[in-house]
Length: 433
Image 1 (cartoon, rainbow, N blue to C red):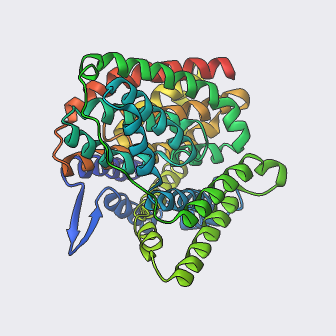
Image 2: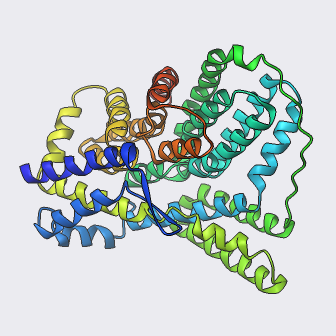
């Protein structure tokens, strides 16, 4: 047991250290993130020492259950490829430019439009994709118009990690915890719609008050136009996205698992895109760049963390943690502990661990533990850049665009925004459940 604890703790500490000190390195033109390396080493050691029984790991990876991490990875990557494809077509940039033009010289209008645009796109695509797309846009726009980018960057990041709670596909942590708990797409939405909406509105008000003085300054109107080159690709991408969302909503009624629906949608998109490329013999970058941008390093990270959780469970450690947590209101205990844990070990390993911890709950408490852990995993990302991979990408993009936003500044703004947002979300979760 002690060996498992030591190896697991070193893996978790290694994730934090790599994010802070050496987030990535380059081999030629290829950039490799480091957050997954030590967990992979830890997983190999645990498997080699039989602290994580290989038969248990294989059984879990081949099981026909919703907790199967391979199914969860397929669901996440399938939805991500659809979102990235739409981004490569320029849809998000087109909408962002339209928003900037609509606002004119009024920062209040621009702030509101961008917040709402990020919220809507996050709901229907993915928080990570939205952050990757809108962060560079905000940085470029702020430089051109000589306005302070901070209100928009913080609003974007907070919105993306709050409105991502609305659908089960909005965040990989939702997918893992939700499917592990056997929650369907529509049941998830019925519960999370109100807490997400109220939390988002309250959060918007908080950010608005924080930056009220900065937003009073006028901006120079921009006349730049941006057009989407391939409308055929856009129609195909949007049609598939909408179709997949509709099928996910009714997945319980048509008895088709969510990972299969998303996989069919992604494969269909790739095949049609390939056919369009072969027929037109141009714009191959839409397809190639979409595949290149997929977060492949999440695969060893999630699977390694899964092995670590299997080891913790087999050694009885998860049971001790679970018994400690199961002594009060499941909503507040699991909501707060998942929020804190996400900022210690990152929200993806936190979700894998907590999916195991809540299994000790029964009845209504089980669903309370699952939903509150989902809330903590999303809102926890706003508190520190360690809380989620989205925070790592966000900080990296700011450095790339020479925008100074220190670790302490992140925590300062993050604490003011995330703690009230968490409290409001959990309060309304209590009401709807």
